[in-house]
Image (cartoon, rainbow, N blue to C red):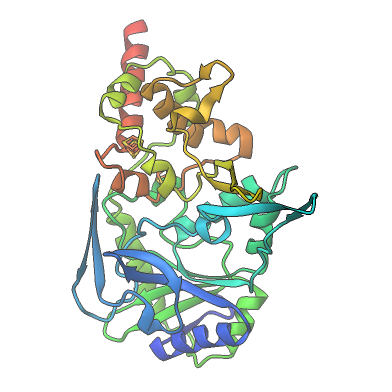
Length: 377
Ligand code: SF4
Ligand code: SF4
């Protein structure tokens, strides 16, 4: 059943939505095809979106192909996550220079016009909620993140074409956007290309009211239901989350950690593509003129120096680093932030060069745990 305010727009209506957001002063950022992947860039109309492209994803494999057709969103998430909009991979935190014996410290002005995220997927929306809790929801607020995040307009798009590496259904984060959006679209392509639009906020209602739209019909509702059922059925992977934090806590000495370490390259790709990983490091860079720049950049728990204390790394082995990453995402994150650190986007599986799959690793630990319990009884 359609809710009050929901509507249907066609592609011209979608163009009008983007134009209206730009008129209101938003930077409109969305998915584009670049470097043979779906990345994020400025979009000024639906012509900039990846129309007619499909992706193929598998552990350690990603390919895009142009198949034609009207679909603008016939693909799953690419390697770039939206966290870089608000938490860039590298940035200058402050600069200091010496002039006539006087030290001057300046902070680059990180403020920009608010951004409108065009086409953010439900799992990524959940990832932003996770980042909000981590970076601005506690006692310590990351001012740079909070300034960029303020006033964001979220135009989400439900997922109709999950990849074989996706498992958002298991994590309760998709394929339909649940909350946190201003407008949420579902792309419908049966017969006539159009978008079912749900309103999630007064700002969303206001923007939608300014574009050409139609009321939602029974056929639109049925078609949307079919798209979401198809996405759920086509979800490539499953993660059994039942009692997961306790399962991992109780298996820190499981032999599977050593087995996965024989394949893991400790490259850190999984942390860099993950939309919720938030670790960073700072470097002070000096030059001969005496000026100094403090730069913040993403860090990875797979880097041996990440856990370096006065006498050496706390996690010297690959197995301890993989275990740290996985148990943080799925277990200790709950203690810290009252939720899962994984939203089921599948990026860490696709972009792992050796195809390590966390759903497989968890299943192996669960199976081993059952055997242990069975042996004991
Ligand atoms: S751990 Fe993997 S599947 Fe989970 S959110 Fe991060 S990249 Fe996505
Ligand atoms: S699990 Fe894969 S992506 Fe992550 S560090 Fe190991 S080899 Fe790299």
